[in-house]
Image 1 (cartoon, rainbow, N blue to C red):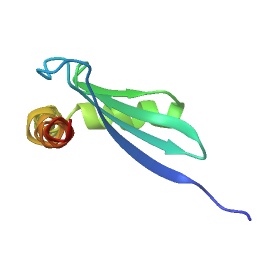
Image 2: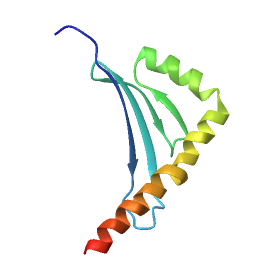
Image 3: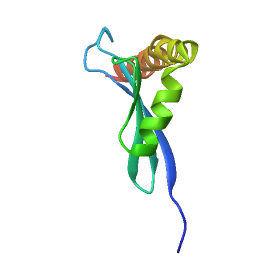
Image 4: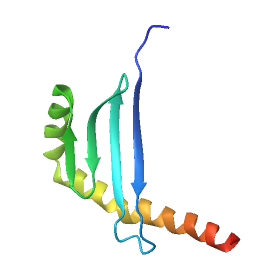
Amino acid sequence: ADGFYEYSMGQCVYSTSDYSDMVLLLSYSFNKVVHLQFNSTVGKFVGYTEEGVKYAENFNKDQAFLQQLKAQVDTFCIHNAQISDSAVRDKT
């Protein structure tokens, strides 16, 4: 079928039990091509296509928005990782 395929994906990535290396990755794709990504370690959006670069430039101008996204490492990623990990540890 003809059409477009647009999606976004959020990931909380870590490998240490104290979550000190936790990274929030937000990727925005169109027709299976990643156009734009936020990385909490980098602290800004990076564009991978001509359109993505334009979006990144606009998003990166909003420092309050970038701070909100960086804060999600603690409020969303670490919080949910602790819940998930404790559920696994309690079963072993």
